[in-house]
Image 1 (cartoon, helix red, strand yellow):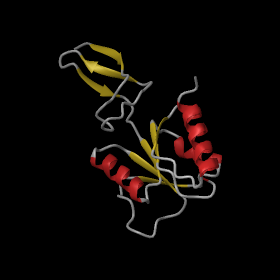
Image 2 (cartoon, rainbow, N blue to C red):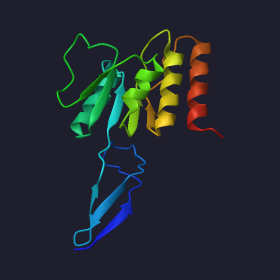
Image 3 (cartoon, rainbow, N blue to C red):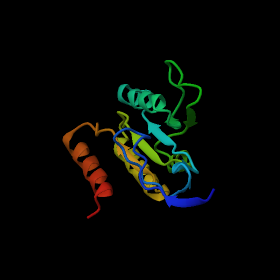
Image 4 (cartoon, helix red, strand yellow):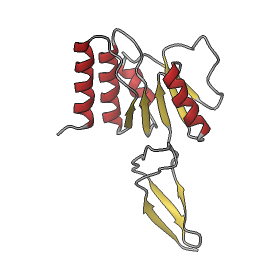
Length: 162
């Protein structure tokens, strides 16, 4: 049985509706043309204790996607499922955010309602860019028109630099 190496560009089944670009190779068995990915996709979820974030987490877990959540402290409610990796850190700390990105392919940022939201989003976006992590942003909740416009400009300039 010979093996061929393919470059896998999209894995549409990992997160429904969200194609993920990978830089990992995959090996296909020539007799079955079955492709096996050498490295699993792991998704980071920020805001997993909120209403939207917990829905994102639930959908990813239901799809069988390996998930890591970034939490400042353990939530008062029910804990995350045992197979979900919990990373404790602060979004305002760039070292924590960079460490949480290690081994991550995609990140869902369901923004917290916080006075430091713009700074946290900027730190998170920069960490995604440095780690080559695909970012899915779950909304802009900054209070007030000026903050909201500033955060939207920051996001869109990062997503569409031209």
